[in-house]
Length: 408
Image 1: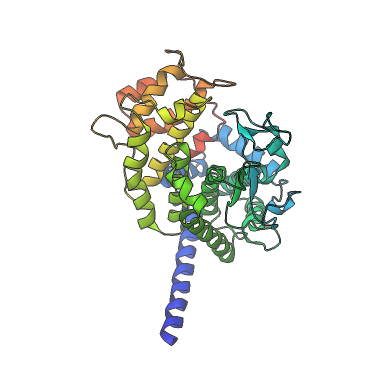
Image 2 (image 1 turned 180 degrees about the vertical axis):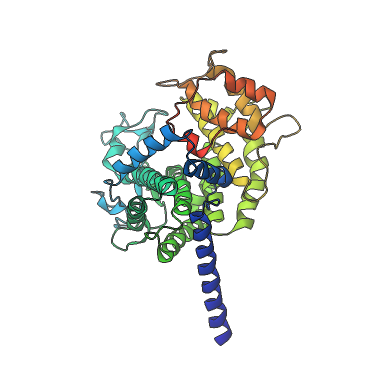
């Protein structure tokens, strides 16, 4: 028993020392503990800014403006919703399936029926999804502004929002999505609802950007880590989680993105590597045709949006892979299925060289592909990609993309 206590104490001391080391390194301008973007490039951007480089002035100015607004945001909490989920516990996240509508053939409207791509405004009555997105956006903005400017006010506000959502007993979210995207008259929640928490990967990186702040304590970090550990366990073991893991389209992709990000955050590198290695066959080989089409996204009523969105997810997986030495960027099946091939298929439609032949309800925003092309250019860097990049519209120098993914 004494040996176990001693081992536990030693582990606590080791983890605490490791966190202090990370905080010290971040404060000195060394790479922060982030996983979605290249930490070294982010640190290089910070060093350039501190050295007086004006390249990032527009993006930094816009970021500061957004961070000032975020100082007045929230706090956000799942308990603020007016309706409790079937559990009776408002701490449980709850949302309604967006593409399901009242059944015109029944007097009650139940069971609801699917109208793909058409969002039912009823979903806005439940506020958890919106609150989650607002919290994520504000925390990322504040953490990034703190990282570049060092203003403790930004870190303090981000810490407050994080504590409210993840830690404080009166307001925290229970670490599950048992009641996400329910369909009235059909079920009380679905695995598909996991798509709504994909932004939590950005929160993971935001905590890394807060390292070194007086406002973000070791206790705070442990509290958030504990929440993510329980949520990841729920993802891996629950029926809803297993259903989403088995999804073959974009839902499966973003399940992998979340599980990998959370595993890296928690130091479970073997789990992260296992998910990424399986993604070669499970995602890239199954989702992308030899000519680059993504048939499981093309059948949707917003085929362009879903094709670009799933490719964004695959590229995010590839970025996460760099943390554990799993290369998805260059993976290719014997018949040519690859992330790059999917990008090359979509490119002519984005620049107007070809007309999109599939259904796309609402707006058809070709510029959605541009950030993906810039990310790919930073990885591949060959002449073909450079020529493709030259043909797209220049980004606004104030876009945050320039801070996350600086060119060169």
